[in-house]
Image (cartoon, rainbow, N blue to C red; front, side, top):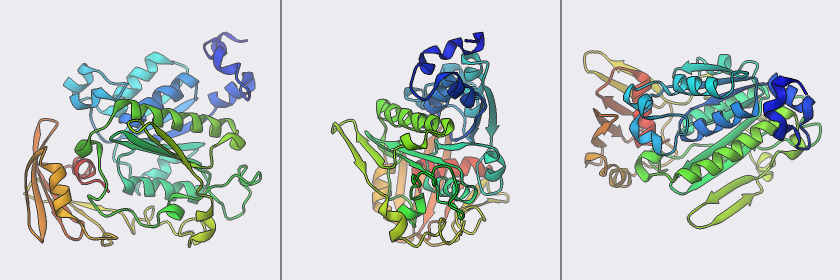
Length: 363
């Protein structure tokens, strides 16, 4: 065994690894979108496993409240407001110098995600909002790249691996009958804004994040090894407080639905037809976030207000919700309208506004 492989000895003892498998990992490239709670654990696991190149894209900076669950960061990172992608790169470089880590401090959107995903063997979800997940799904299906979805909030979490159907049906996982429904096969429309909890409004149990993130990392390693027969085709749901682990067979969703992405080859989020747009409002120190489509259901302002009152003053009417929030020590005013449009006052940076929207509104 070469000296460079010594550190992976215990891993290479596993079935399907050996020196050949480890070499395959060493030549692999993965894209991690989001390096917060899930992403920091996933990045740590993939780096220690010896994935050759890890592209980490995240728009946020480290804050003190992150340290309860985001394992790559420390108090110095929070005090200096270090971008998460860069803080992760520094830590990972000290953990495994054999792994190339590319830190991308940017908002992942329809203008840059194809470039970020170029040459990657898997895309792993460390995001905090459905819009970005649907965007990742578009890229994964369009280019036939496996996508490992994950999410965690409160004490619950989910993990699901998408091995996309391709037009020719000749992807290696399709040749052995292991293709799975994509995200829009399962849920054609994202939930209405504010209808789903976020970590910033509902809290999160660190170990719940850890369970989901390690499931995602394991699935990503299987994909990069080409061990598609070992990839879990079911959606896994865990609740650490209720002590339950459930698996849902979702295979029928591919045949039952319209297949917006997989069959019609429509990539609405990737081409910018769907998803939010952002506009800096000149002279107002504010950013407007708009949606090209109306929400799939009514926005429950009262429900959102109940969650946000723990973070600041909230007022509602039948036309809008307005909340004064403090995030990372900075004051913001969030105004949400019935069509899903929002104005975030207190910044002229689109990425910051999108982050505030994702944290406190959600989808």
